[in-house]
Length: 396
Image (cartoon, rainbow, N blue to C red):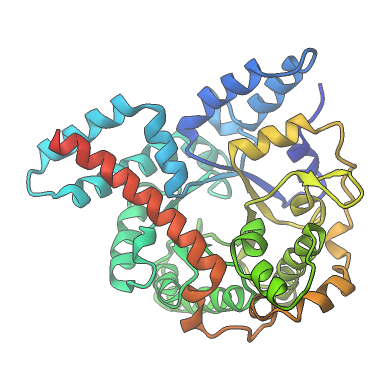
């Protein structure tokens, strides 16, 4: 039986972790659809690969080391079983008639977090708390409202011992992240793109841990991951617009070089300082490079590192489709320097300098960075859509 591309990636470093970027509730139906479309002669291998990654009947031994969710992915879970979630909404509204639509939505979201966390709790137990955590995200409509994010973060954390709280890379988000860390609550820093954000996150974690230890807080199962939203950095922000204005022709390979440079700078900064947070990469792509080769640089450029890679269903399927086209992983790839010519070119762009330089942004600027704003807007729209689902049920 062949190994999945992601299993091969994990073999390049024993501390590398592959996570599922969606609700565990979605996995069985997605697996069925994926296997139904498997090429002739591949189905048995694919079924074995996916079963190793996650078997709902035996979650304690799943290959995935954790799970992340966000508003669009949570919406998918609701859309997969609208009648089931419709009934849950009705039950919540009936149980507490004082709740408005937003209140019912939030209780429904907490149940979505709890159901996902419960599904993988055996993996958390079997690993002694090292693996098997699920990230629940605070409302992306409140990225600068620290008070609201703290209240939501505490309610998310209460959904299970294997729940970590996902917070935005805004000034206020890092303040809440420190507070939750001080209480021994695991965190995931999302909508983060820049070295300045990552260093600010590490500082918040350090301060929170110092407070936790001084207060005697139990940190046995505490974890921190810092998310680099790979392709969203180069594609959702202002790099292309700034390049066009300056008459610079920016290729997709050069954009990937820039994303690689930002993440490697943050990764080695954390390693060199011995920081306990772990870098997490998401928003990966499968594509053709300038020479026509099939690549997924967001994993190939970092092989050998002890990253977390959180992978949505579509990306996992893409890797399976091209598993015979991808070059073998270089376990020393993490040590390679990014393309110097590309970095020199990209440094002409203000928004690249903001992402790459340690002092590229001040904390109050994080929430106005192009990639942050584009991603937060997308996440907020998915949240509003889910709220509207709740409204349609409550109002009939």
